[in-house]
Length: 388
Ligand SMILES: Cc1cc2nc3c(=O)[nH]c(=O)nc-3n(C[C@H](O)[C@H](O)[C@H](O)COP(=O)(O)OP(=O)(O)OC[C@H]3O[C@@H](n4cnc5c(N)ncnc54)[C@H](O)[C@@H]3O)c2cc1C
Image 1 (cartoon, rainbow, N blue to C red):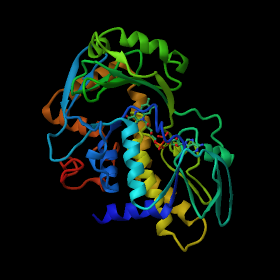
Image 2: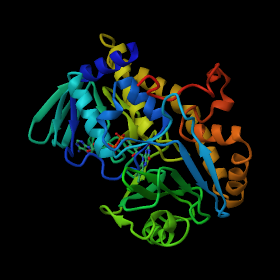
Image 3: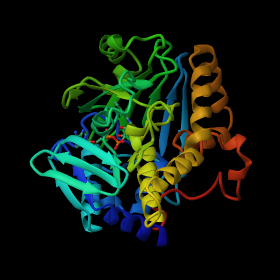
Image 4: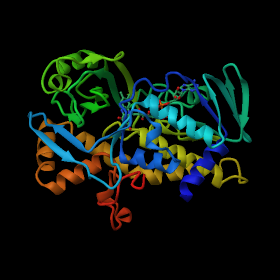
């Protein structure tokens, strides 16, 4: 549609896409694509069949700290509300899409340094040299080398969540997606996400500064995976399919700069991950599109116009949901509240269906407090790729 064409056009307008690890796109993520991410991918023109490990999820199981389980069904259709896909596959498909839209993708060249002035910015790329542009978008993750090159602060910031994950084969996870709330992890949680042929992506996320120190997550993970319910989901034949990886998750809009003159930061480099769950693929895609739209909308304007437009649209799209997510995650640190919450979620078919859709970002986190976003069908619209 028109928006997809414009978004692709923006990719081409941005022209250079620098990607550091071509062979190892992202070695750490959990691979869960929420409805927010799926809708962005659809707008960008991604086809599910371009992602070999694309696994649609229709059933979610919540494991309460009490041991009780609640099964949630996502809508059977039309469209898709949650998907698990290996990040390696997804990133490769996105790079193909960008190339197809006319962007020149420079793979395997690390950013070595950067300068900026009132007319634009110059980045220094390994093996390539200097590239000059009117705008530079920093989509370079939680540690953002671009932000560091400009000395833009956030040096002591280690993110709000800390997560670790492992790929496993030969599991008994089946086709359902499991979220495990263990009293020792709250408001963090563990997960087991289904992948094709008995594979799974399993791991845990904790809130920094909470009851678990980041240094204790490895031993905690081993303890969790050796007892029910995680042990039973893994089953007796599960084998690690690679190393256990740990990474920070930045989820605090405002913790690091969103812009600096001609430079716009998106995704983890802008700390826009969902504060409630630590999911950030949808937010990274959304802020990427907003940055591209701001650059295009202000072309021919004054330097700094794109930054102001971009910062305003990020705050409009994500500001309230971030505030709401932070508040809710504070409340969920109590095992009693989490147990009661899961009981309430399981009470009726309506609560089960709508909680699953809300959890997978089918509607904004703070929808209930923002009447301007209420419209007909907001709770019942189709999923992404409904016309695929
Ligand atoms: C264990 C774990 C599980 C997660 N699970 C989920 C999930 O299930 N669902 C979800 O939505 N989110 C999840 N997240 C969060 C999600 O992974 C991030 O929010 C998302 O990947 C952010 O995308 P990004 O493009 O901003 O950054 P990244 O995915 O970190 O990408 C940064 C890119 O910058 C490149 N780069 C870095 N340095 C340089 C350099 N010097 N020069 C050039 N390029 C460079 C890297 O190669 C990389 O390609 C998880 C995070 C963790 C840690």
